[in-house]
Image (cartoon, rainbow, N blue to C red):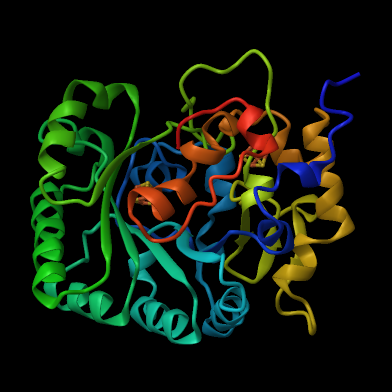
Length: 348
Ligand code: SF4
Ligand code: SF4
């Protein structure tokens, strides 16, 4: 019998609030639209021309789409009802390319969302857009700078290193001049080819960013060949299922950010349906069953079966929530010891 069979999945929630509603709601602003060509990313491989046939099929030209505004406002309005919850503007591509990105940030903050975070490769983060984002009230901007002087082009393959460096430094200057709240994070994927410049990257960006972090080299559900460091002998339950809810670019609510194919087994609801809501899906019998199965070592979701990305999905003090709440000072940590403290820790 699995050693976790006597543990109820609900015991892994770090608070009652998180059991009621996901601490992180990740909304996918586009499917397959990016101006970079990163080696570590299926979209980057697609743009460069070295993606697998399966990825090419998932992102065939007709599939590429932007999240409709109406879906976004439904998500933001719901997240705003929960003071512990935060909203991540993510995408299967580059979030800033959504034509209404700034409107989305402004809408979510005016609706009352506690914390809005977004990613960017900073290519289009010119001065005009930077000011608009800062004035819209974004809480955290994470700039993906996967590489440094010698390794950036090898790893991001977009030919824009000088522009990105200038844009990110200027963003920080503007933030300070305007007295804006936005915290600046610079991150890189912790992949083998980056190691020779990792310390130079850290030293450089520590001058400008509020935090510099290194993300696990994960595989995006086996779509690229990344592996998050060493894989523990015993598989631990994946924190994604307890911490994050992902809304896809057409309103499908997904079990995991890796559910890019949105197969029936991985779609738990659709926000276009009248009366549907994230809170209902998060607490649904189906989602409860998926968590309990995971805890007991049964990987019933197709995307989980051969996935190794659980090794980079962190709990407690290794989690992104800890970075936001404690390291960036944007929330509170109750410091309560939970069942998750006993689980294997990894990096995020
Ligand atoms: S910038 Fe982000 S989405 Fe675009 S190719 Fe790189 S990792 Fe992928
Ligand atoms: S094991 Fe992989 S596919 Fe499953 S929930 Fe975790 S990250 Fe997602």
